[in-house]
Length: 410
Ligand code: F0G
Picture: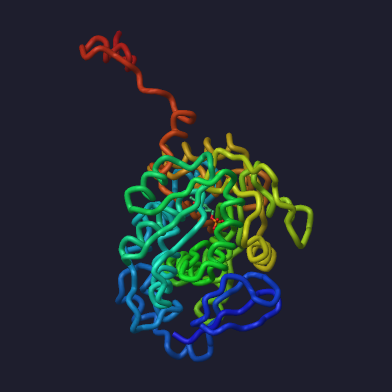
């Protein structure tokens, strides 16, 4: 697949065989670019339909050579759930949840890792590395195991959800819990990968990883019978995913497959919201949050790497950024589970909490077709449920005790 990597700031181009993570001349973020004119003639959507709904259905739009091995665990193909009961409760006619918790390791990161780890193998890397609030490390560890690569992950000293730690451990990653936050781990890992040859970095500044994640947009388009929704709502932490999904919709437009682009709405937790703050103040840069804090530990990030791409996505798409409180997040998590049978981790519920807030404020109207992306499975973070839900009632095993506890006695 013909592509190059381009700096989003100064436009310098790099060849596909070069391993770099930021622009060498201005340090800005990078993006994978294709020759859309030649792609348009090569893409046949009828052929796509003959392949399973998955990341690799769209292989013509992914930057991995046809001949290269694909490191896959069956990622993508997640449900786009029509949420009638939740829609009624929130006052929306057409609400969908794209449930990324259905991926092999339980989060959207698997879409990025199938492409990113395939790229690592293509470049001959033997070791892969990332910083993570938990899901990235779980996913990278699994894909590294599948590919036979060594995996190193740096996680913050506190507040990594139990399920995610368990995953990184069982897949055999070297886990370093560093003294500091995700932002500290993130800085450390970039330096490590830039100066230590042979370590392939798979955080979301790696533009190849985002190419995998953009397939969320393609699948939504496919599942809505070849059209885009009016509005897409995404939880935002390091800001790679919202940027990737926006790129996916832009690809579809460039290829002539859609004429209308959706509004992109990013939701941050109130205690970790530098991009939402910049958006609301009309700033062109962010002020990092020094001590980011939220129950949604996956998005407990004060200095998001891809803030610039995310701000562009929401501004160009005429969308917006909003914040939600921890209470709103936990309430939305419960609402989604109880009205739709979909159990997501707190960070994912931020998209539902944001939707509720924006419908209430009149910023989203009832006839808009809305897709909320829920990014990770609820079982990732079982401890939080103790806070959000009532404890089981202890009863004796006899009929009268059980009936009394259920209010069935007369
Ligand atoms: N939701 C979940 C469940 C996540 O794990 C993350 C990010 C996000 C949302 C935000 O996505 O960073 O692309 O804006 N988790 C990263 C990690 C940071 O290390 O697992 P983003």
